[in-house]
Length: 433
Image 1: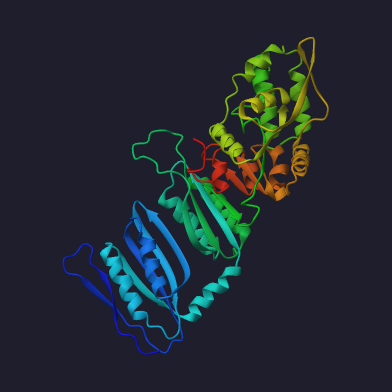
Image 2 (image 1 turned 60 degrees about the vertical axis):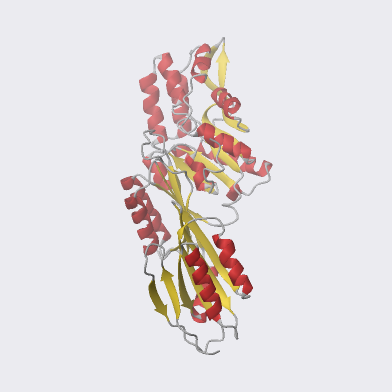
């Protein structure tokens, strides 16, 4: 193939005198691979116009990608000119069509060796890193991306999942999420997870690191703890306060949630203190349960896309069934209170639902629905939630105790339950308001 003449990159949009920047492409190549970068004000028809020119010259498109931030376009097209064809005319046409549209065009020649190197990276592991916070800052993103670079991970794509936050927004329930698609294998996954946990604690950002596999894209069942997860209280503590034994019961509850005592034993001790409580108190508490921020938004979206949902709780079915009706939950498994003469006996009917029982029930529901355990999400805050959180394909410690956060792969501590949707890759376009 003959030597190519110099060609020009024009940047004329804001200047009366156009500036010229010359690049020389050398000959003796069997094929030419060229990367076209377009930047400028976004407008309809840009991609159509440029690809139409490539079609006229029978160019092969090897890769294409586009992003738009605040009406500013960044478009990249990697294309191939076959042996025997002259690249000069296609580059000239692309250049001047971009100029006519008020856009800047840049051409970069890519060697076959470099292209083949990129192709060779396709077999490498891929992951999704999701950040959540009320508002994301440069410092948060800088810390997370620095750790990814340290681990040898390369960012392929960045996507904003949440809508833009108004500058004068005063609502404390704002949410901000971005998703990174990364490629590579972490040098030390354990140290990376510890680093992410430290960043999360210090800078107030939730970080999820998930394999980008078929299961991440096909979760179908979400199992929730109830107390301090779906609702912002511990029901057994509310019952105890009404019965005048609040301090004793809350002390036992806290010890159990921190993992300092066996759940079954703590449960028996607390139930014995509730003996004689009038049944009418339960209804009064049920209708006033404080549902956790984001729960309605989460469940309306899950229902829309066909997810199954379950409550697996060490609390009580009386309250779980109230939430089932309120939020449209499919399954409820919890402890059945025993009454005698309209008052609590201090006992429950059947086995106590502890951490191991929750994990067993989660597997049973998944089997009943014909699901792989990797398609299941488990969400909870206490030590008795850890067995199901560890076994689920996606386990999330939600506003959890420190011990639970340290032992869970994922956590949400900065926003409400609807943050789960961003871990699933949803963006605000598809989430119910």
